[in-house]
Length: 93
Image (cartoon, rainbow, N blue to C red; front, side, top):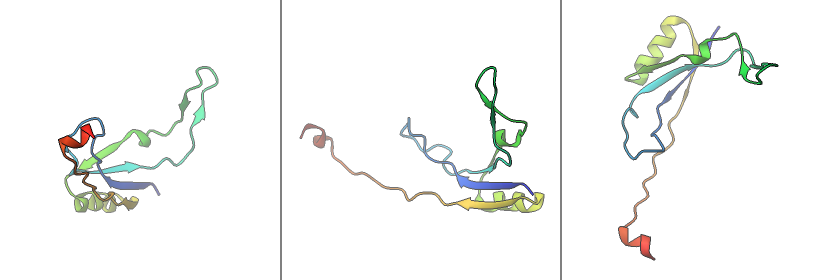
């Protein structure tokens, strides 16, 4: 049985916006380990489900899809959002 994890898309660290952070992502977990290619040294394997990411508008929609398709899943809770309040004048202290 394939297993998957469901998590909420985090905020992009390189930008200040919060676009698409309300989406929930279903990502399949690797069943086998990747092997290093002896010629190039790159990691690879024969399992392609690790390349699939499905986006859903709500957590319930992601859970319903996983249950309908028969996937075992676990939900990774989103970390608590911390606000760092500072004034512009703090840059010059």
